[in-house]
Length: 503
Ligand SMILES: NC(=O)C1=CN([C@@H]2O[C@H](COP(=O)(O)OP(=O)(O)OC[C@H]3O[C@@H](n4cnc5c(N)ncnc54)[C@H](OP(=O)(O)O)[C@@H]3O)[C@@H](O)[C@H]2O)[C@@H](O)CC1
Ligand SMILES: [K+]
Image 1 (cartoon, rainbow, N blue to C red):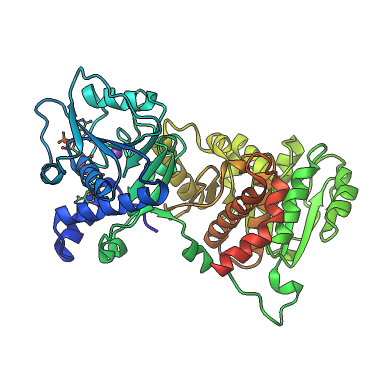
Image 2 (cartoon, rainbow, N blue to C red):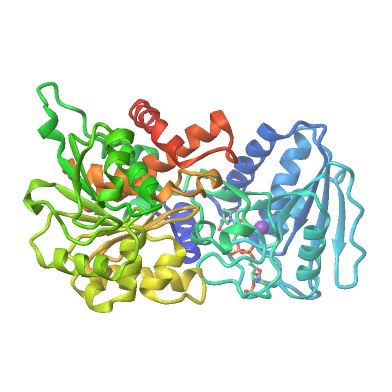
């Protein structure tokens, strides 16, 4: 699903208005109705609502929604927030005229006294949406600050007011802290990024019938993974298959004190459908692996404690995953250097393999084409340098993938897959319970297995992050986020496959 910029959203609105055709006012009515349907599904008519409406179309949405909610039997209060002399949008003005006189309506200007809020009231933030052109100031900033201090549930309309959707919001800017953001048609780019996403709370995208033709033709590098799309990437298992049909993968990793990481990756690879799995481990790991993962074959390194030399034949494998528990010894770096000189099957690199690459730019330059790298934010910073903000990090991600002709799975709340073509795919599964040691090792195992089964690098990344997150969501549903540990992700991987197939 494409993610649109604010300018593209305006174009989509204009195209819909012209081609459907529908009046701008009716389109706003549709948006307000979608918002109200969401509110009514969540809150009973006993819950009072307080609307704060700005001067543009976001405020217009607020006014239309206040009217519809009132007509549905809810108690509604409206505060119009305005800087003296501020122009109002036409649809705002029309919706103000349509507001039933029974709704208590007040204007808040500079120096206002912030209203007392009824206990349990829900604040609807309709100050500004995608038309924000500068940080909030004056009365708008004051109202946003008061809302944030009121300790109430806040539902933001389309965008939390004060948040820029396609550019960094300044560090010191005032932004409404939303509990929920009900956004029209598509989430905005800022919702998916770690810093700006924190203002958004839990977001829900509600369709308002923007013209499908426009959505189909509009060009954007930003995509959101949908269940339907990821499902289309699944391959059915064949009746006459044997273990050779589903690839032979190799995982290299584990070191003294870190054999668990390799075991987690190996178990995940097996649950991700691999036909055959070999692991290369230092001698210290031999009995651990043979006991913990009897399904895997083991190659032992010449070294007792860590990886120093590849012991197999590259052509035996359809994919090699390197990194979980690897360690960063100098002879491990040399071993990687030697390995990269060979003709290799596709690679997946994680954890210490990434740290070794980051510390040795020459090694990085020899990275085989189409390698998949799976850094978290800190590892990515080591690889590509520090980012000044979320949007700068996306630029770094794009140029890194293009320069090294690789795929990067940047792990986080909405893990982002960067590609050599300069595209970005944001994941939609997963939860904060997955921020736990070993979660990344499980992902490496899954990706290595999928790649070895013949998926392209892009398919592997998309299917892998989605299934990994889905397994986390299914696990969290039964055991809660706090108790979730990495091996649970592997336990629930089968259910994630089933859920995706059945969706
Ligand atoms: N038919 C449609 O198009 C649909 C639109 N929809 C809704 O419209 C929203 C976008 O509407 P919008 O473009 O009017 O933007 P919005 O954010 O309400 O305000 C812009 C106004 O505020 C001003 N302004 C900006 N920043 C400011 C600041 N810091 N402090 C003070 N003023 C500031 C700016 O003026 P400027 O000074 O920049 O010229 C302009 O006058 C979108 O989020 C969705 O909710 C839906 O109904 C679907 C149908
Ligand atoms: K808003």
